[in-house]
Length: 247
Image (cartoon, one colour):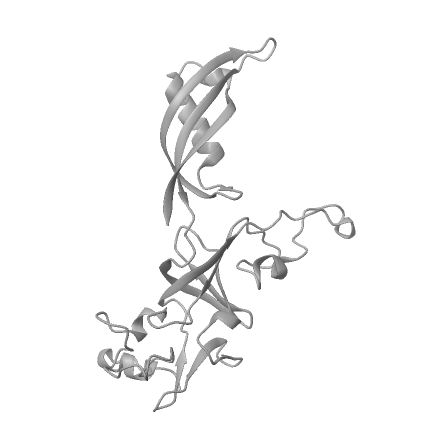
């Protein structure tokens, strides 16, 4: 999920008012402001500065007063690998799929065709429902704000929105749905990094469906022959704690 990446910035600029600080302290402040909580295309989301490897320069250009340094540093980056299983929280559900949050990263998207098969969207409840087809057919809801396990299929870095002359030249997201395969953000909200995931396998989906010790659905009923359809429905899974599933 996390990796250590080495970066180099040839022009870390320390403003005149910060030249009285220790050089390393001033450089760290600039790097954290420029990089932390930012997505670097084709790399990932920078979580924190790990360390500063080297500092060179300190050139002050005439008429400016700022000092310019070449800095090599390392950062902790979030970029999950394909096939990695993430545990997150189900935040939103619509006809396109599920929107999932890791807390520090919200643009995890499970498109409809990568849900358990067959699954259908309940327009009244505004929730996805897994139509479990085992010995005892069940309707198992993807309830919001529950813990969910998803498996990473791809990490995407959509192109930045272009200017739309019809909107007076302002930056707008013209193809949020196509860029995010259904979108992981609100309308007109650009996501520079999107994790596309699936839940179509044993052990994936809501954590409450599955027993802790094996890949059977909670409630003690085993999967039916390993065909990926699972076992007992969510109603059975919730019975012990008194939380009845939706009908």
